[in-house]
Image 1 (cartoon, rainbow, N blue to C red):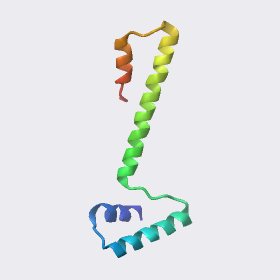
Image 2 (cartoon, one colour):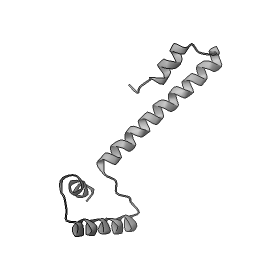
Image 3 (cartoon, helix red, strand yellow):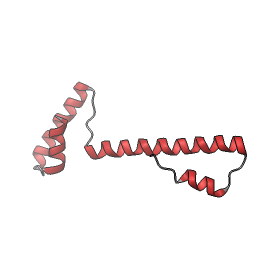
Image 4 (cartoon, one colour):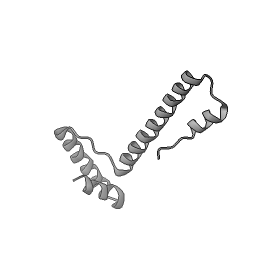
Length: 87
C-alpha cells in the first residue's frame, strides 16, 4: 500500500476531490494501524539526518576524550574532527 501512495505522490497529479479522498483514506489507515505514512523523500531525509547526527555526536565525543587526555587541541585537529564523515 505504501508503494501505491509513493506512486500517487510522485507520479500522478490527481484532481483535488480525489486527492482529498486519498488523504482521508490514508488518515483512516494511519489511525487504525497506528502507523504514520511518510514519503520516500522523508525517509531518506530522516536516515541522512540520523547518520549526520551520529557522526556529529561521535566527533564531539572524540574531541572531548582527546581534550581530556591531551589538553587543548590544536586548531587543525578541531577542524579535522568538525569535517569528519562516516566511512
